[in-house]
Every structure is written in C-alpha cells, then in structure tokens.
Length: 379
Ligand SMILES: NC(=O)CC[C@H](N)C(=O)O
Image (cartoon, rainbow, N blue to C red; front, top):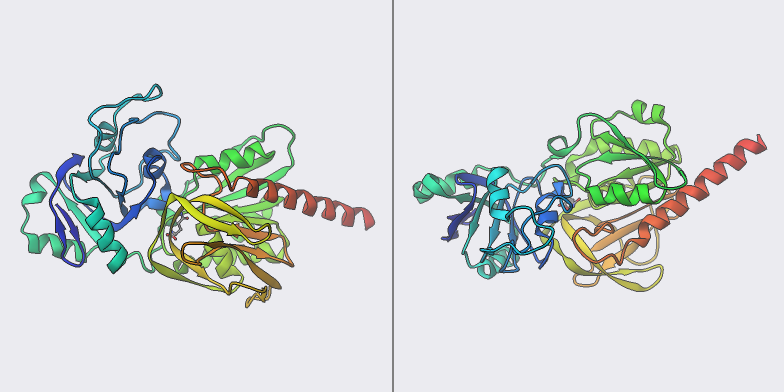
C-alpha cells in the first residue's frame, strides 16, 4: 500500500524489502539512471516515484553508484523489469533494494500518483508491505501524518562524511579545493579532480577556523538533502569565506546556500524538478542546455538586471533560468569570485550539456590565484 498524507491510497505489489517506510513522496521523470538516482544523497528522506514505467532493465553495477549506498527512503515504479539485461550488470535492482533494506512498491498507477503530486504538491507518504500492509488504514494514515515534514528539515549530518579525505588531482595540479560534503555525488568529485584540483572533502560540521587553517584556493558546496532555510551554520561559514575572497562554486543545495549567503531567501516549489530533461538557459551565452535536476526548493532572487546583494557582496545576477517555469537556476556574483547552479552539471544521470561549468570554475580559480600571486609580488 502507498499512502499519501491527504489520505489517497494506492494498492500495489511489494517490491524490494518488506515492511514500512516514510518520506516525502516525489516523482522523477528520468527514463534512465535509476541507480544514480537511488544513490544520490540529495534524495535522503524521500520516497521516489519513477514516472518511466519500466525500471530495472539494466540491473545494477559497480560503476554507476553516486555514493556508498542507496539513500531514498522508498522506491515506487509501475512495472519493474523481471529480467536483467546489460553487459555491466552484476545483480538485479530488486535484490539490491532488499540488500539495502529499501521498501518499495510496484504495480501502482504511477501516472495517477504523479498527477496527484503535481496538482496538490509533494507531501508526506508511506509504503506498507508484508505484515504492515494489513495495518488498519486509519493507523497507516496516522503514521504517515506523524512523519517528518521536509520544510525546515536539516538533513546534512545524516549524509555527510564523518572524517575529511583527499582526492589527488589528475594531470597538473592547479590548486586545492575544499568540498563541503552536504551529500556530494561521486561524479562531482571526479570532475573536480579531472580539472586539476586537489580535492579535500570536508564533513558538513567543519568550523570556520578549520576551513581557514586548510587555506584552500577554492571552496565548493555540494548538492544535498533537506531545506536550505535550516542551514544557518553553513550560510555563515560561506559568508566568512566569501569575505576572505575565496573563489566559490556551488551545485544545487550549494546554490541555495550561496543565494542565502548573498542575502536572498529560498522557498519550497510545489512539486520541484527531478529528472534529466529540464531546459535551462544560460543568460551569459543565450545557450539552452538540457540538464539534470533534483530539487524541491529554489532561490528567490530577481530575474533580469543585476541587483545588489542584500548581504553586501555587491552586484549579483541570476545567470540561469528554467524555461519550463522561470525558476532561478543559477547565480553569478559580479564583484566577488562566486557562482552556482541549481541543477546538476555533473549530470549522472543525464546529458553533459552543462559540464562547461567545471571549466568556468577552474578558470575562475586560476585567475584568482594568479591575481593573489601578483599582489604578493608587488608587496
Ligand atoms: N539536489 C539537491 O542538492 C537538492 C537541494 C534541496 N534539498 C532541494 O530539495 O531543493
């Protein structure tokens, strides 16, 4: 049984682990990339429904996970594949869900659920299978309604690493980037290392003093689960680094935190953007990118002419906009070296149209490092 907070109920078949699970019900429109979706830490606390009906055809492999485990609280699909067919596969999705204890449900009318979530907005939900399916419906609904609400929820400490670790740069080293792990994806780290960054992944609890002691050439805030309005400590950490002139790049949650650091607010979208086919325009070049998304919140900043950062960081422009609904998809600070995007340039899964942003970051860091070296020489 899939039960939504508004009392809607959908009967299906038990899939993956048996039992009960709770989370915010959201839908993803990606036709491929379920393994990357399941292992994206940004989905912690959510029950993810795939709108594509056939999920699991290529099984699971060791190369596609975006982190060390599955993070979704539950998984919903219409018609999971009964066969696994791919040369890279080394197991089935069903077995993986069981192994990771992820309660799923199949055979529900995913189009009906999606329309419900699109019309009413995302909401708390629960999946009940095995013995739990027989629970009294009123009791099931009570349990769903007593679950966590995504609004105001800080989930960073559930997904972040405990201890820092280092990744060596590929090719010539251009500098050290400190990555605040708010739920970072492996692809992001790979792209940074491939650009010549020595990467230091830091736990989300790192202090301003520890960051200063590390003295990185650049700072990166990752994607991650939860409500950005509940991350005051990360915002303060970022404001300190921006004041010190450290070049900054943020992705998704990192974009929302840059928005807040610059003095803008964030808000919850009715049903968010999740999938790999979202059109975004880069206002600097006018080029449209087809991009990978997974966000339920967004930054509230004015689209159009640059405006002053309410927090005193100079002029800021909204650099990217979603063409479906005009949601802010990127920020560019014009007077300090800092920019961010709401979507996923690392893709995984999805098209690679936005990979150039990692080059933009590398170029920005090289310029800043060179300018600093010149200043030192002048002294
Ligand atoms: N992928 C992300 O970083 C998601 C950011 C945030 N948790 C949101 O839902 O909007």
